[in-house]
Image 1 (cartoon, rainbow, N blue to C red):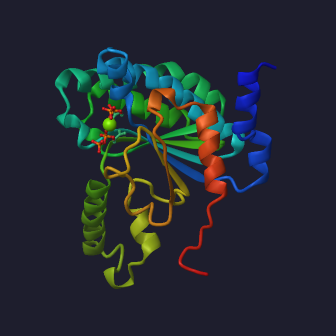
Image 2: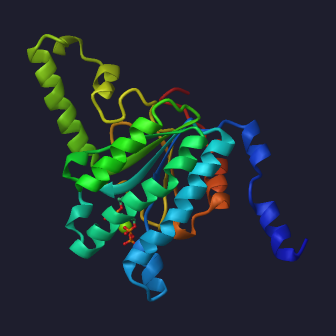
Length: 252
Ligand code: IPE
Ligand code: IPE
Ligand code: MG
């Protein structure tokens, strides 16, 4: 063992050790910093997005390995349409390619894919990939992998209210009896348990319209690491930090 591998072995929490502790059931990731990763290398931004795919693969594999049951990644926000058309078009193509290429392996590993967000605005090819991925993996239960695409939490809340209003008119629900669980059920995340841990990469300390309602009691973990550099050991460090938190939920 050379010095650098020894150093990394003592700073990186080991999976076996982490598994003795409390593993978050639901992890959310705001995968940020692809553009800056590319710019620092004098590369076009789109290559940063491409490089980020490898980090996502590792995050999925590590989630399965340590026993995370739900992984929700912020892939494209409702606000990201405002980016240059070239970048948006590239991202749409990248989503289609990735879904198609990874689908078989995700399915074989027991991953259930779900899309959260308003997919109506997406290109037909991508909508087909979404539908195919969701239907092929619908029977899997090892890990629920939510892809937040054209997702915005405020928009999600407004949509939930509109749908609730329609159901109330049809006497399917009674507004007087509305409680938190019923409301949550109208969100894209439906019956998914609330996230326990939300990770944001790239050194930004904001949540950019991601799971506002759902994250009421989530633990946040911010790291300066840019998304394409975020690997398994970074993820394990985040889990380790989570395990040291004292979650009180308003109690003592
Ligand atoms: C995150 O990386 C990916 C998406 C938002 C689609 P960015 O593209 O936001 O990268 P930065 O923040 O500009 O570095
Ligand atoms: C949040 O990142 C959205 C995704 C990671 C998909 P942004 O880069 O869009 O967020 P801001 O603009 O820095 O708030
Ligand atoms: Mg960004």
